[in-house]
Length: 219
Image (tube, rainbow, N blue to C red; front, side):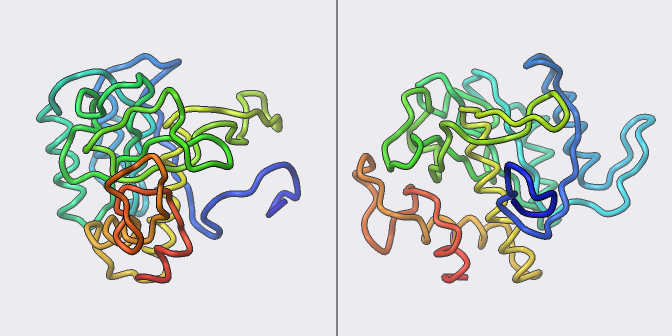
């Protein structure tokens, strides 16, 4: 399947992926995540070698239960916005309102919750609420394991949000001048009706199920 002919395929063909390690085994500090964001934006961070080209999309598959977005997080996100860089974040997996999770409670981000495999029903663990912008499959996602070459299935909003980020990356590749706000709007407007979302109506879903093709068509 795809380039290596084995097991999995990426959601955004011909899009380069840049990895920035900020956490280790679900442990770490917001300051480390913020530093990784600045590094991805081309800023000098400690002794790390500068990235040759700043990224167009930042994916944050992480979170912690805090009632407010820290100024450090928000400042980094605001800088990304000012530079035309999308920031996609996971809603969290505590079955609570996503406004109690950070960075999903920050401004100027697109927040993705999780759906069950092959269905438009919410995963039982996903955070929900007005803070969530879109939902994508987050159960039994096929991905690489820590062992080189092996593949496992994963569940969580951390695996939902890369699908939204990949859609944003595709839109950016199709329309280089598109802004993050436009990307978020097209993704929301292209979403499918979600049966569990009473605010989602045909043609104006906004908080429905991710549909990459529909988002690209609308753009």
